[in-house]
Image (cartoon, rainbow, N blue to C red; front, side, top):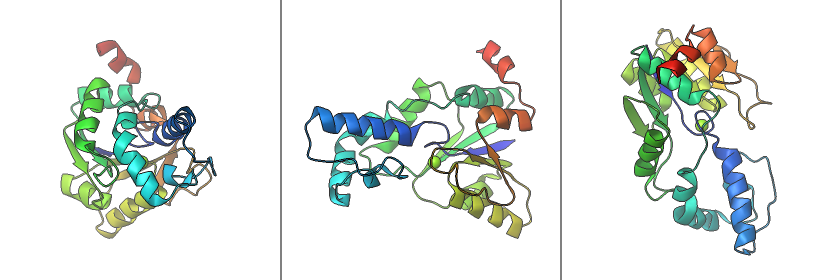
Length: 205
Ligand SMILES: [Mg+2]
């Protein structure tokens, strides 16, 4: 099977970790910014800073923060289990150099430090439905409701089957799961749906 998997808020806890990191950073450095929202999807909307200030902050500290993101529960076990079953993993992440200095290097190091096996990785804002088609994906996992909908609709329009999972996150839990996709709470649910034994993979590693 070929899996296409998103990273931020699917495999790693991006939004939650970023928010705490930035709050602490602002306090520690006595910066003049105030937190104005605790549930906006992107960090630049959580503070009273301008887009330019947010961009400047990310350019300077975003890579450091990104290197520390924790994995969500069972993500590593799941990705190792599918690797052990000879499935292919394609990572599709929207991380780009407009927000980060060196997203490719940091992301690849992060994957290796977290012992996450993968076969291919796409960076940037390419349409994920095109990536899925290009690599012949059997299964797609992402937390973004709009992206999930585009993948479901695209595969319906080209009449190809694909299993699409919407990973529940803090920011999509109130949103409706698009028709044709399956909402899951964790990689454990996906493993169950696909009959993948996570314990066995744990014992192999
Ligand atoms: Mg994401």
